[in-house]
Image 1 (cartoon, rainbow, N blue to C red):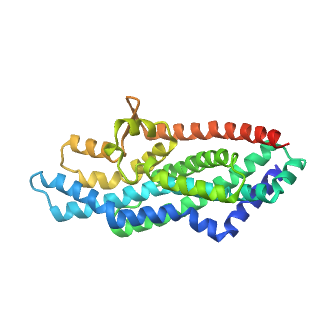
Image 2 (cartoon, rainbow, N blue to C red; image 1 turned 135 degrees about the vertical axis):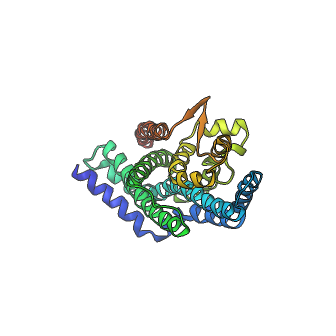
Image 3 (cartoon, one colour; image 1 turned 30 degrees about the vertical axis):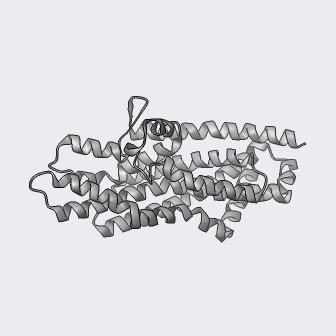
Amino acid sequence: MTQFMYLTKRNLLLYFRDRGAVFFSMLSMLIIIALMLFFLGDMHVDGITDMLEKLPNRDTAADKTNAELFMTAWTLAGIIPINAAMVALAALSPLIKDRATGKAGAICTSPVSRFTITMSYITAACLASVMICTVTLTISEIYLCRKGLPAFTLSEHVQLFGMILANSFTYSAIMYLCAAFVSSEGAWSGLGTVIGTMIGFLGGIYLPVGNLSDGLAGFLSCTPVIYGTVMFRSVMTNHITDTIFADTPAQMLEKTKSIMGIDYSAFGSSISVQSCVMIVVGFGLVFTLIGACATVLKQQKDR
């Protein structure tokens, strides 16, 4: 246990000392905010406002204000799981540097089990991800409250923190598996660029799930990304959706939640928030085992 804690602390400190890695791990978040602020956000706000205008006795100005708040909460809910992925990827850069500098070989020849070494890298990435995501959630809630959204309840805070833990663990395991096949810092940086570009689409950030083709939507159902964003959106947009769609037909609320990826169905079944959490954690356990096996096989091959 002492060896595990020492290695985990070492890997965590190496990540936070690299200010460039910390900044670039949050670059995807900044890009998404810019896109929603200048391009995509207005399109979705106008769509919701136009839909509500068709109903009698609506306050258009209030509807637009609420729609803007809804899109803000919806966007921030998608950013948190994306941060979990990108921070986990950046926090595993010490593993790549260890390989590039030859330190990995020295660590593996020390009297420490390979499983302990593997888990120290994954745990350090997970802890870094939890820290950054918790800060992101705190800033997001403060911003939403200043915009007029009620503060989350204690129960909702517990749910959101549990979701952060689930996402951080799973993405740390997935990124570790990716790192098992990368030996150079250049290749790892290139992989980070690809993942950062794709993850916004996989999470239904740039385009809502309801606007995707059946084939692409089916593909997303096979990844943990969409389940991670769905769980956050379900909690973080709950209050504002009740406000916007008060005194509207139930079908309108259901359709909007389905299109925007707040309520999600996969393989013919509706997926609850609890199911999303279990699915994400299940992905994490599977990738942890695969990553440990891949590490052993790679070390045997390198001998």
